[in-house]
Length: 342
Ligand code: NAD
Ligand code: UFG
Image (tube, rainbow, N blue to C red; front, side, top):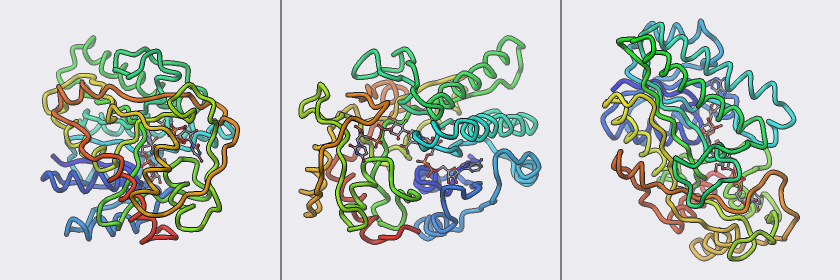
């Protein structure tokens, strides 16, 4: 298939492009580079042995998108582009709604005008809020998102679903096919160590914080709470290797090919690890001590969140294959080879 990858220069997008090309697809990447650099795509090109066609375009820029669609006939878009910092979304909600929702509305409008009505959307486990069941299946009711970032994911799921529902009601001969992928916690990097997660400023997420402590850029990790109802009191999450997550997008294309209508999949491993499990595994695998101190809980955090990934396995033939040791090794391999990122 010929795939438009929005946000293709970012963390998950760049890794997914590798998996897409290795599976025989062709891609065009677009990105406004607000949270990434062209260097990632240059390196992806080196890894796969071919240049990645790239347009520096903002998804809110209708004319810019029109130009990309005028010279390409896409079969599907994989839509990663968006702002993703939870804390920033609380202080800058308008920017998050305008970019994530406004941008997606422009994108799907241009797509439908060009007859491309297949989209895979980057959603998040955050839509489950404080989940009503553990492990979380796709049947778990959506919960209250405590921040505007999470709200944009939840609202975009509804908006995209409504597009398909309307097509069915209107007996549209070319209805939307929409795959909503709810990611759990992606970590790790391509095994080459050439591309990886490259956050701006002080990282919000656990693994990039740990790797920056390991490389000496930050003094110690702050563990947010040790009084949760978990095996060691620290928060439990479903960490998934970014290459497994990337492969989930290749498998999701099979649902698009089968004209799935709206299909929702959790992309997680089904294993829950605590903050201290991650710290200890990282230290053991890489031989680097991670000094830490226990701080109060972070506002909005939940105790436990991990997936039941059986549906993606059953319907897409997808399963996460890489374990926690490999995730920790690859995260460190990326960071130590690129102490200052791109
Ligand atoms: P990222 O920031 O590395 O990648 C997103 C890319 O989108 C960046 O390259 C950024 O420059 C680009 N972008 C942002 N706004 C844009 C716009 N208006 N026009 C064009 N490009 C734009 O983030 P990521 O971790 O690769 O996440 C990819 C997607 O997955 C995001 O939608 C994110 O919300 C979602 N997601 C991520 C996680 C996670 O933990 N990383 C978890 C769940 C969901
Ligand atoms: N944590 C720390 N110290 C840190 C950072 C995190 O102790 O410096 C803890 C958190 O309290 C939590 C765990 O590590 O228990 C994971 O936190 P992250 O910030 O890495 O990830 P979250 O689970 O909070 O959220 C992430 C993304 C969201 C996404 C969600 C999907 O940031 O965008 O995963 O499950 F929606």
